[in-house]
Length: 243
Length: 72
Image 1 (cartoon, chains in turn brown, orange):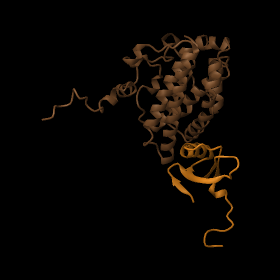
Image 2 (cartoon, rainbow over the protein chains, first blue to last red):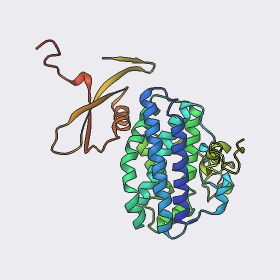
Image 3 (cartoon, rainbow over the protein chains, first blue to last red):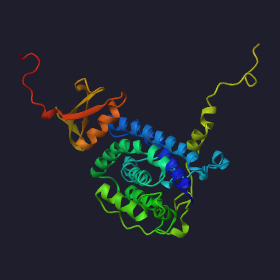
Image 4 (cartoon, rainbow over the protein chains, first blue to last red):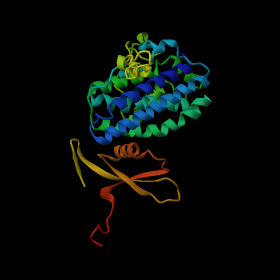
């Protein structure tokens, strides 16, 4: 795994986070939260575009043709595989996962790679409001299950203690390693992570997740433009001939 | 004005912003939220369409009113 693989994972996760946020733009508990969901969705989709744009300057673009046909080739966390059905899932993602991605962006900005230092800095300003939103809703109390799941996936996404992200830290490309990332996430959220015992043998270092699976067919079709084709006007060849 | 929400009392905040340093802050709208953090997030999400150089929020309850319409 290279730094490009990590940036692609960040980009794919930001894209899916943005899409899942946007799905709640008319379903949140208040009009203000609806608007925040829409705005945060736009932010994260924009962040994903910037991150995809960093792959070429990094020298290696790990995106292959399989991304056009295989949803399991996308590097999103299992948390984003399916649309969220409960507001608690939104809040846990907003507070824990969005902040975990922000902490990783901080590690990139604090690292030695110029393109990441320069292009990712602005994201941190926008993420401040995502954090305030997530932390405030988290304090109001949510279900335990999505919270524990988000913590587990965040910690696993940071990577094993002796894995590639630890190596990137030792090389100076990231200013934080897995243990420091976790500590900063806990510090930011002013809470301790629940005990997580990860089976790193079953962990996929490319997708940075332990669970198999992939995003739902509708979302994948939408990302690929297949959904859009359903509504495209018929071509002259396909149109019925006029009498 | 207090808004009753399921989670308890929500507070109304006035939102102020300006586009350039030479113009004064002016009111661009309001948001309702249960705490300052959420009010900041809501204000930024709701009123960030324009390129403000400054934005601030004030709890409406904290405004000291000298007189109101019809009282002058």
